[in-house]
Length: 160
Image (tube, rainbow, N blue to C red; front, side):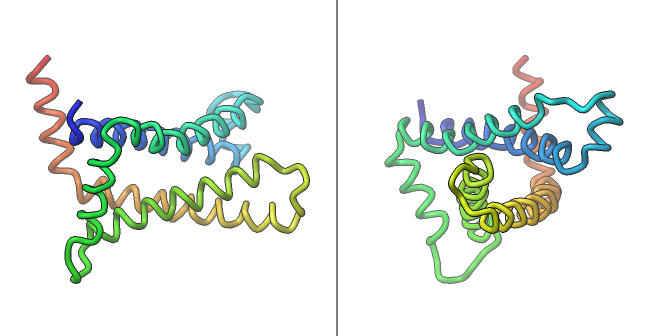
């Protein structure tokens, strides 16, 4: 499989996981919303969120096994290609940093045993504020990428 195809697949699966994590995270943060929309408390919601988070951590690692060196080289070129900072460089760097911070804070919140309560609380706040930032960044990302999304959607249905 070509590296560009692998990057596209990782992006699409990562985006789907991110949306699932945003939705389940909103349901966990606002139980009243969960009860109103689902008609019940939904005890399975934390499990869905936690396992989707585990996949969120695993996906780039799995993607690295398929043409990993070429993809890493491509990512490094796209982030460090010139000295003038551009939107794409900020977006890629921010996405990686957010993914790492989400992963660390999520594992600490999920693990719980033997971790001091103040650290769990601090990681929960980091996780929550980063989720809000990620929500608004996703809206901005979709706005900026709307033309590419439209073209990809049209091409997808032309092939069908």
